[in-house]
Length: 345
Ligand SMILES: NC(=O)c1ccc[n+]([C@@H]2O[C@H](COP(=O)([O-])OP(=O)(O)OC[C@H]3O[C@@H](n4cnc5c(N)ncnc54)[C@H](OP(=O)(O)O)[C@@H]3O)[C@@H](O)[C@H]2O)c1
Image (cartoon, rainbow, N blue to C red; front, side):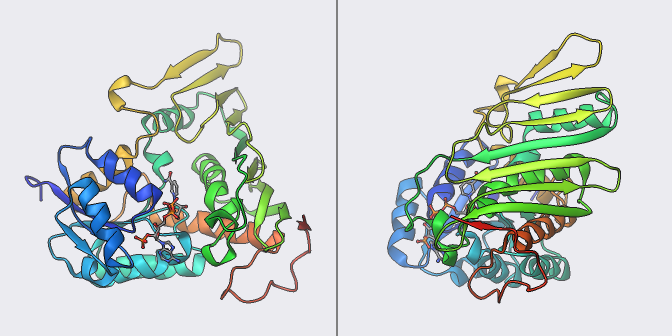
């Protein structure tokens, strides 16, 4: 594989599948060779739009395609377990959209499948592959702000999203937490690891998905992370990391930053900006490049987006959902022992 292009298969033909496929064009060593949809027509239309050789009207045919090195799974989250599972079972490597799965049980099943089959698997947490996020993390690890004491991050969209939208549909894992809250939670985890406790409140929709959720994550070190997500309000979508000797502020779009500011106690603020050579700030090319680097190196997990980290994020998302009383169809009833903390709209 070292000399050849990495051959991608795209599974699903929606919004992010199109964005990802378009961004792969920026990587000369990538090639999209096949696409699969739940039916033939959208697959063929997608193949024609992007000049893709093979179009399949079912997922299993793509999974069996020996000329596909890695499949990008871009269905709604409720189908990630099934779609990624079919591919891993057939021997394909997989990059799976965020949130990785609906809950940690499904995530553990996928991780076990990949590790059991020796296949590469990674959550498409593109934030972790962003060059400026990596720079910020390196600064924090080098002690630029001392010991991390707190993290704040939010992601909210104004919408409005009608009840028919994927984000409002319980059958598609709707709500703000899984779709948007996964970014603030993953950001907090990058800096502080897995929390030891979680408290949360939410405003629920009549259909039972969370319109907005606020959560406080606490850590054994005494650190705290405050995360907020919303599909009923366009929040600042910013983040800050405060340490014993300073602070780092990431303005709007913290998970795909084009700049951040380092405030060290007693020093002038320093601004760090993205390298123009890294391409458009919203490009998904960095996560794709990380997958291809790992495949070429014979790695089955990415050190930038490790599977144990993905499992920890899923545990935190499950814990928050437990506190706010959100369960999706097929997941069973809300745990009676959980405190009824959610406030229906
Ligand atoms: N990384 C990012 O920045 C980013 C941005 C947006 C979304 N996402 C994630 O990507 C995933 C897809 O989001 P999207 O915005 O692309 O959604 P979308 O536009 O609704 O597309 C999802 C696609 O999945 C297939 N699909 C729809 N309903 C399905 C079902 N019930 N079961 C199986 N497949 C179904 C459809 O493709 P076919 O008709 O071809 O089967 C549909 O076009 C979500 O998990 C979301 O959280 C990530």
